[in-house]
Image (cartoon, rainbow, N blue to C red; front, side, top):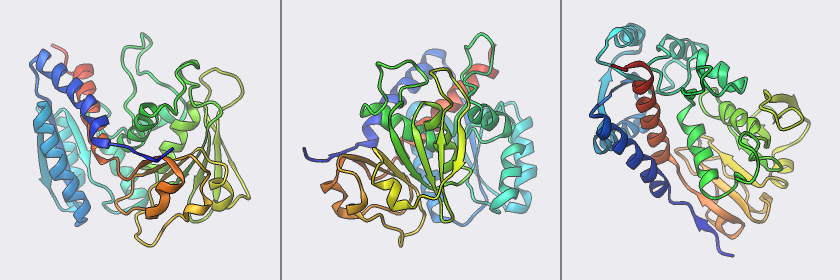
Length: 305
């Protein structure tokens, strides 16, 4: 069977229409404030695309360019502004622990990225709701969630299995262990039942759920495996290495693999289509749709009249 190229725009359009209809029905226009404090051209491109997409669904988007020395104060101001309903920061700013600190400066009531401690704690502990009535879903990081939506769209999630275990039996490799995308993605996939190999430059770790079908917190173990070992057995390979020099050799991939690239650089070689059953070259449009869905939910949760 020929490889099917995944249309990220088509997947995103379904979510955008749901968001647009919901906001129009409620007659609201949440304001999303994005802070740009780096010189990364990819961040500016992403900001431009986000602004255009938000206008299409009825979300007010405002880009605020600040120096990184003033970023914390500006985030606090936005936290306290009732006219701001969502906050987004283009990372990296400083990198490392200082960026993690900034993620926790953002109020959980406005954190559309799902990167503050409250949301990350819930995600890593497989807590799926913010309330006992289970009416308020937790906010999840946008790019990891976008990957999950791709996998749902093409049927990697098995709808015949119980919710929370629909990746049971799947082996997935995630090449990237950043705190913003790679590690949260590995946790989400493991919490849904997959065996996940998390790869970075130093090691390969295995993320997996506890035994049984209950919503258990995932576990992480170190392995002695190499990248080529896990690629050979993976049903899905997701990669996000931001370097034009990193390429996955197609012959290392399993026949029929699902290949997903979320890096600004393409980590797969052009002949990946000869080995893959599904191939997503980019998922940015879906990431933006998840961002919009997150702010729509936060507005509903915390701005009820």
